[in-house]
Image (cartoon, rainbow, N blue to C red; front, side, top):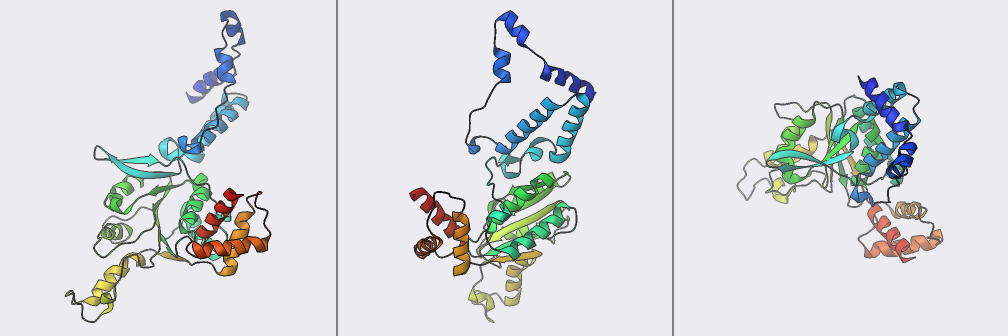
Length: 338
């Protein structure tokens, strides 16, 4: 049945409408055949989907018959799947009339791991864990913690870009949505993709209890987390939940008799991430190296390496200290200025 349809499609695809246009004195088929889309900002449409449509159209155009078209289409579905999860990398969640909905993120950062200068050991650990996950082997939930601006979030985005064509998808959720975690996992657990549930800048104050939802989902709940779901989180805090010196006092002024239990409660969330990877601010030499590597991507930056590092050092002293983010902001400023 499919091949019969593909034969009809292929005939239409290759049909010469010129004699019809000549007889009717029209040019609509020529206009459609020679259509060239204007350049659009990536945020206006899903560039990733557009590229796939153009690719498969080109393949069908060059196919000899319906047998080749059949192989092209089935191969496409095998590689990318179908529907929303097949054509998009990442998603957010929301509610429409109290129903849980997934919304594609249409303007994804194209960052790759090679774009992130330094942090070799951290990237290797992240790649090793994700490689095991997409291949169906056992893998751990991951917590990336450390100083601000060191590339934690960029590393996770790069991982998605690297493994997207192998069936990896990402769902970004925020702290106030943790109560939806069970519903989200129920929706994706039987699909033929690997999902990373991504939580950026994860941390909790003492009065926030949303972390209890997360603890139950990671480990401890009655329902086991499916094999095609992992949780990747970033945080500036190693232990995620704010601790105070009172937590370590033998006698708690607030009346908590079992202070050790209080500490264990706060540490238990971070301990449920099987893999924790630390990102620290770069040294002076590492910071200079990041600046030099980023500058290579801008042909209009012609400063010598000495001048570049001197300017970068002056910049970071006024803008929050040495970090990968500071280096990128300096290069953006310098390129714009030139």
